[in-house]
Image (cartoon, rainbow, N blue to C red; front, side, top):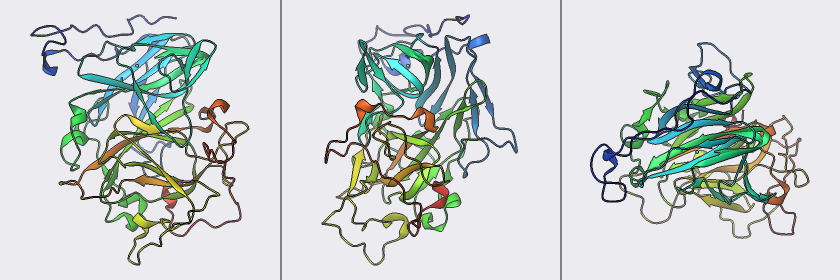
Length: 425
């Protein structure tokens, strides 16, 4: 059933001045964003009720989460309200099987990106697999690699595969599987990408708009994670739970910041989800994910200094080889959890969580630090296990290629001393 309104915005081209591309400023244009749908295609948004227990939300933010409920099966394309988070626009897009979402036309000063939550998109980028005459984009990509989330600015139509799709549009979709697709569509102005974050009281981190988003407080991570983080500028706030129309959990999305004078601790064992990160702002060009390659040995490992603190130096002197995946804005990573090379499914921990090697956010660069110190800001997309199977054509067991991590957990081993329990629940 087709929604009663158009699926794309039709805002006017210009308020004043000449046509696009001839020296027009950003303020000359009406902002275009996906138009919210209604009736059968309405995506419901509410604030978590007081005392309400929700699955899929982190233990350090059990309350004050935003709950987004998708439209029912009779909807071809559902479009949520748009949220501004750190000056990036975020819209949830739901696309029925084989249906198409058409995004508003971008201005010359805008860029857009997407993150799939469910399903497959056809011919939106080449970061996927060519199959049956189409490039298929999945919820996950090649493991242990930096992955751009940007979409070509000329791309406006997003078609789902036979199962449909759900995505975060930072700002986009076309779905192609029987279940349709869901995505987050993200859009940002080029001028925002020229900004840096130097404190948590001004600048991009204060630009928060949309339903239940205004005034949402950033929380220092020493509160939930303990005294090891007392001296680390590491922040987070209660995020957004996306669920199917029947209430089944689909994805949790939350945002973090970390200042460049301290790395975030490594945690062990696992999460109850498959987690993908994407940077919005970066403090420097080493900022990104750092993870172990289990079963390897670094012959040049250097012992930690005697005054090393657990939160910043934890397991730095482990003899295992560690790799890093630096991000720029709009860039994230593929799966870093352990993957069964025969099925593409996550390898599970002894307690039923997804098994991860030690990993953390790396941010320490050589040379003098920026003055003033800068923060990296990133988004964490937390997916249930059923949505993060990696296609086998993205994996290899060729000797020494080390595309995916396939470590099987030792259920009799003790967790490493000092690992952060709160981050693994």
